[in-house]
Image 1 (cartoon, rainbow, N blue to C red):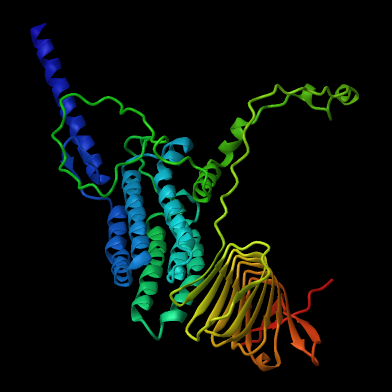
Image 2 (image 1 turned 90 degrees about the vertical axis):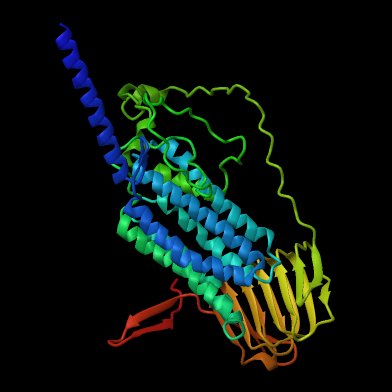
Length: 474
């Protein structure tokens, strides 16, 4: 009997040693540390590190060279990318969790996106606003980890959104400051390399490990903390980790970025999403049971539940009309029809933001004018040596009394442009806009209206594409 017990003990010891060896091998293959054995990083994480050391590092250097808000914004972007690296490292060593736990794991990335976009909104008066906008419009590309099937095209779409603002940066600084040109190149290359990274390692969606434990439902550790060497193997295997959340310390999901990631997480359920629907029996269907159609539907009185207080109204910012350096800021005016800027200089620009049902008059010669996010605004100015730009606005009326070389209309619904005789040769550039009309002077106080085309036809003539405007049928 003693001999049998001794043989059983030796067999158990050998099985335990084999189990430890197999776990260590699995951890090394997935870039993890198992029972004190430190394995190498997975190929996926190594490829992501190449992106961080290449385009991201260049972007950070170029942002520090510019400084100010651009440098602060870049640090936020770097933190977001480091968080995504930790997420990818965890996915390489864990199996995919349930959708609810996955949403919790994506929350730190979503919070970074919200932080970056909020920083742009707080600095609308910055001279580097186009830089901040380029980053804010494209940073949702980090949500590719929640996109199934083809995350690469999603990143490309976000990259295209950035180019609208990076083209402005190039236009403003291409001839005067090379640092901004390098900044644009390095930032856009991040998303170009990200697409290549996704195509190589996550073509049809985030690739989770096929072995290993299921991803824990709590946020992963901060990537900025220095990694300590693996501890020695504990004698007994540890129990399951405690489940905790940090919902009290972080804002609840409700932002556009959070909703975006939650939507993708729900869509990834596929046919599983219908499991929550209640099955209706045939005798409960009115089209199969005529008796139900003849009966009056009783009106159920709902029990009065707790009254939900209405959402607090969005706090309005105070109106502002002031000269800040070389920029006139005209912001947040409502029902104000006597706004006027009189003391102008050639090097000054005017930035009109969030003004509704108001009228602004600018005297003298100005460098350029930007109208952003305004509604029912009237603008009358004398001369501009640069561009007059209207973006993200509705029902704008613009009148030039002197000369202007270029008028740009982007993402605007309803725009009336009254030209003077001196400005008839100006260029009018429009994109993603509708209901645009140009009024040409005829006589002293008479104008003739000409609509700007909104519909175009493109054909192949055998050697190139030919695009011409068409009349809208109907």
